[in-house]
Length: 472
Image 1 (cartoon, rainbow, N blue to C red):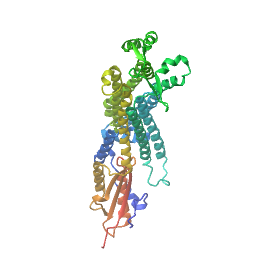
Image 2 (spheres, rainbow, N blue to C red):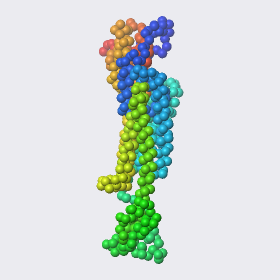
Image 3 (cartoon, helix red, strand yellow):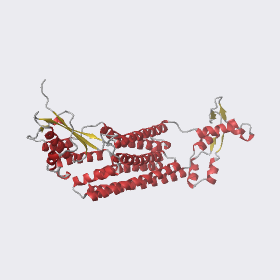
Image 4 (spheres, helix red, strand yellow):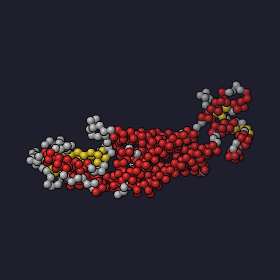
């Protein structure tokens, strides 16, 4: 009997008949020691990693069935609820991402850009999951003798790392906008225009107040430097052509100002009415998104999860709850800054509100993707399974390998670790005596393998048989 002897895939004659008459593995829901451990593992992951609801349909159905059995609800009904809700959420990802991109192109808002990137991330993650699920369903034990269970984790790890890096770059861009000085491109362009048209006599008075250096930098004379003050031409312009808000605004302007002040005001001026309309349009859509996420979250919490007991819907509800909170924060912060500008400007200039809110949103999104990244790094590192699951596996092994069995097993010879979409169980059986036949030991190994293979969230079972160590 060699130490490398694994479980037998097929058996013949009397050995096969003996295996056939062994008690069949009990239904999963009757073996609560392992089922509860596996269920606890799924529920813990769902509440901790909110993006874990993004899975392929085969795994969705399998997980929904196991959760339903553990929760004591009807399995087909639970699978139907999970399938319809996850499909609805995926379809909404497509619609919301498309509309967010259109709104960003219209408003140029950093907040909308950040939110659109997150929605595109969810959509792309679903596409990658479908692809990896398809590849995992095309079993090829010749090319992948250990199975293809790690395909999904590899795909999710690569993409979650990419999304984390993308949002990190977006956050750096927001931080740069917060730290940089106010944009003076318009001011410089108008100043260069008057400098480059000095041959035009009509601009002579304006050019007399403009001083340009050899390096091309232009400065307008202030009143202290001898710059002439003239009647403010902006007042009659806005009184004649401006909106009602602009007509109110010009009442606060000085009656006489320098030409440099006119250029500075014109370069920096943005129509507040247009800004307000864009903000209302942007936040109206974000409000609709927040309402959808809130409704889906409440539907999952109060109806779908109690009806299905699904850990997938727990993750989906957590994801939508956090999205609702973040979106609501964006709406509140931007509206507050627009309605109470004097309050906001005491600690943050008006033009910095959008990059500041976008920076906060980017940090939150980075955190959610980092959770998924760490989760799949843990899976690929083959970390030990949760203690509840390991204890259940040991109990199953002890129920098969008894005192009168031809083999013994120690606690340290029972290993269970996370691998791919489930757990791998390895058990090393030690033959009691040299007189024990190979068929007896292999028969016990086959019975144990069949028993362990039916456990929840068990992807692979390997049984080793070794001789007892003898001699020095």
